[in-house]
Image (cartoon, rainbow, N blue to C red):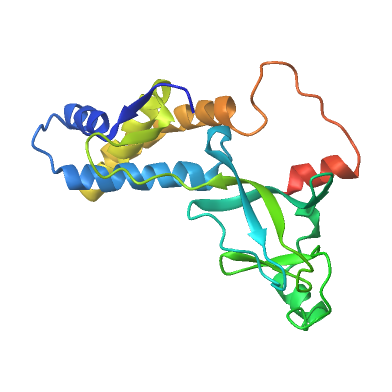
Length: 225
């Protein structure tokens, strides 16, 4: 992402200033900062955490190669049967138990073009062995990178530095058992979280009015998250 970021060192300094304690333990701040960052991206679908890559299913295999190490949630999967024959297989995902009931012989079935699938471990399991090697183009939400050193950058843009500072501070205060102060910071934090999700959440890329449509396609998009 092209926006300006800030570092774990910046978070440490800001939290220590608010605590009025320049000697406060960096390790406690680091853990709180990473936990708050995980919380933000576990709870919300944020545009700048979207990632694209290609994985594959090889000829004779009924499972794909491993999903990316930073994979968290699927947005869309497109199987490329050929350069001119893409197939959106997102909606062909099945519940694991239902899949295994219907395709118990998935690994020994006659080979063909893979279509129905389910997640198993860190792979996509298909309803039959693949009759060829195919590429699968996936859009997904990635997990945030852990901040370990002072120069490591936070995932948030610079205009969200106060959100990150207060989110870290609130957790640090609870570690110190300063519950009243932590509750006060939590109250200030809510408005910043709401603004963050409003500005960077999926579907919030422009300021134009959003039109609510009806129909089956819209119902799916509203419920898939």
